[in-house]
Image (cartoon, rainbow, N blue to C red; front, top):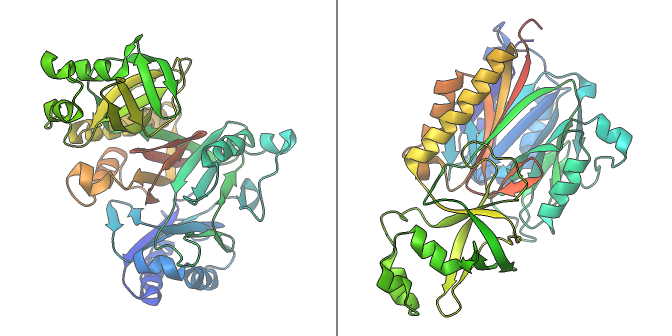
Amino acid sequence: MPRFRHAHASHPDWRVAVDLVQAQLDAQAAQPAFARNGTLGIVYAAGALGERLDAIRDALAHRQPGVRWVGAAVEGVCAADAEYVDAPALALMICALPERAFHVFSGRAPLPGDERAADAIESALVHADPATPDLAELLVDLSLRTRTGRLFGGVVGGEPDEDDGQADQLAGETISGGVSGVAFGPGVGLRSRVTQGCSPLAGEHVVSSCESHYIQSLDGRPALDVMLDDLDVPAEARASRDGDEILRALPAERLARGLMIGFAPADAPRGFGFGDYLVRNVVGIDPENRLLAVAARPQEGDRAVFCTRDRAAARADLIRICTELRDELETESLRVLGAHYVSCVGRGAHLFGGAGAELQIIAHNLGEIPLVGFFANGEIAGDRLYGYTGVLTLFVEPREA
């Protein structure tokens, strides 16, 4: 099967943007390396174009008859080796898949929940509104409606609607709020990896006691004391009950990109890097009670490690997942038809040092492959909602196909 057609453009007028991407699609249709026809379109619109998602869908449907569209308004779009953030931009990919190999879903047309239906669904691309109630639990439920439990996608959101604050999504039709996307059957080959881009500040610990967003102890010791030890804070400051004194003693250079903590269930498999951790911010300290406040709800027994974002670690971990995927392609004799990438809004140029640098690493390590994606306010992989991550998914098929 030829590769999927893909295109991207930036222009404040949505009509011009659609014309620009259509010209790219037409040019690719004349090349034997690309599939001339398609059945599933994935599209993301950023900036002012996100406000015209309905009109864009209608225009694309008129120009690409027979294609079902899914997508969303987002803060920024990813395309091949380029990224557009804080700019009116459009990025799309048209997948040539058997019509029965995928199922578009939304709150209006949910995925079936019976066991027989789950056996027919391998995985799903998910777009979630940030205001969706109990999103973490909903993702677990969605994952149970697939045979493998594998979800990929992210929390979408562009220019919020002034009436309800909900971002527009596409799932065959334009909808607002909730969760939508497309489920894939066993005939669609997918390979996925998660990159965290964090570096540990010290060794791993075990959460001994916690309540809600507060960690009381790690390894049987006061949580704040453990953190200060890991950060090599001088003994005098470590013993202080003065919050300002403690904060002044923290190593500012090491924590230039923030202080975070990664959590993993005690029984979670240990992968390379931070793939098995949920990384969240450390948001406060209680010097009197020696507690830590974190942007998570850890469980007793969880593994925990203090970490920070780091450009070198982010580059190395992104290269790692690309290398793992490349090795998997070679071992299983697979070729790439297209790719989908979701990255945290805090990554991109902020973390990698330049616009497009993150995507250029992918292109350098996997070659010039069709790619579409977006910058998210939370990234979805498996049945979990991550932060500060990149989720790279490849559409693949056997080389001899």
